[in-house]
Every structure is written in C-alpha cells, then in structure tokens.
Image (cartoon, rainbow, N blue to C red; front, side):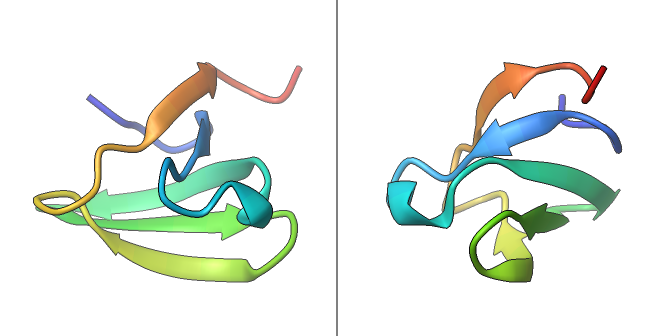
Length: 56
C-alpha cells in the first residue's frame, strides 16, 4: 500500500519522472512529481510503481 513519503513512478507517464506520495485518501493519491508537480491519481485506474520507500 502506498504511504506518504514513498517515491513512485506513473507507468503511463514516464516523462513525469519520479514523484513523492504526499497523501492517500481512499483511492485518491496525491503525488508531487519532479516534472509536472502535484497530481491526484485515481488508485483504481493507475498502479503506481514504487521506486523506493523514502527520499533518503
């Protein structure tokens, strides 16, 4: 399960770069991506790929 702080990629938008999960409320996942800024993702439609657990 995705949690705040995790670093992810959007499989359908690799140009967005890596993003850090900001919050998850139900199926709504807010991610701050390197190239596009904050995006709200519908977790029912997109399976974000975990890159690492945090940015350390």
